[in-house]
Image 1 (spheres, one colour):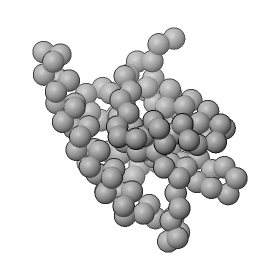
Image 2: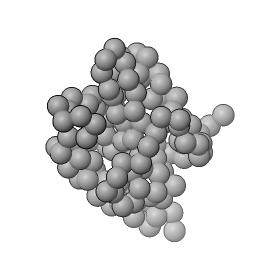
Image 3: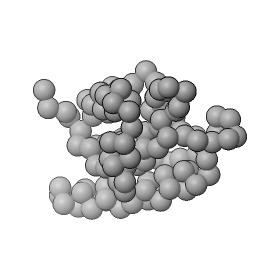
Length: 121
């Protein structure tokens, strides 16, 4: 079955995902497939402070946490904004530099989405 929504990887997101442990790649790949088909993964949560809505998939493996951040609120497309291993020393908070990168890529996704809408007219 072909996925309903197209996926667009921004920046080095796909490269970063490919560097994750196999079980993490498998889990995130499957969950992104669910997202493309309109479902919400069990371990996904809204990343606060973003408009349009940004969601993160959290995957724990061998005492490490891996995150994949995406949005589906732009032109019926899944934009994968960032994949990273969380190394924050400040508890559960996402590090500021990661949040800044997500903001930059969200702006780019909005631009791409507007372009796609124009092309579809």
